[in-house]
Length: 196
Image (cartoon, rainbow, N blue to C red; front, side, top):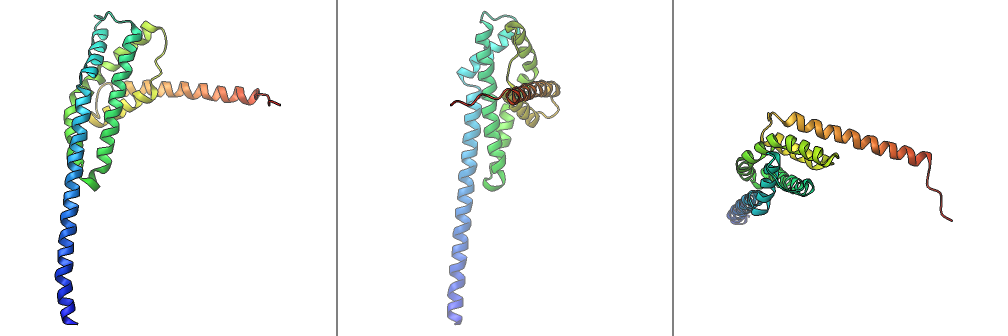
């Protein structure tokens, strides 16, 4: 009996050591994958395609663009969707940080995108207003702009334009909810006739 106990202890110790090494290696792989994701998101933000959209929007904002407002609108949404992708990746890293050790990768991403997010936070209201005026119609970007607000609030919580951007989102949400309610009321008052 004593021999069995003595032989089990080293075996259990070796098993515990192997499990610890495996967990450490898996965490290291997750951390490495987190940094890969952070670099990919940053590379996408600074890619040629995204740079073209940023340039188009900046020239338009400064009144030095020859592009049609509808073309500029394409760039508007491309950049907004790029920030949505970054926010999704950032949230993924943040939510995995305790389990997979991706906290350093999330901080790295925040450091890399900080300037870009702040600067576009400064510009977004102006560009949006100019586009709405030139196109003589409201931009329906509630969900994408809300995601940009979430990203801006995470990276630069006290940003001076954040409350204005959130107000735009809130106004769009209220208008959409009003339209949806009116549509439901119209449908309830005049239900579609049953086909026979």
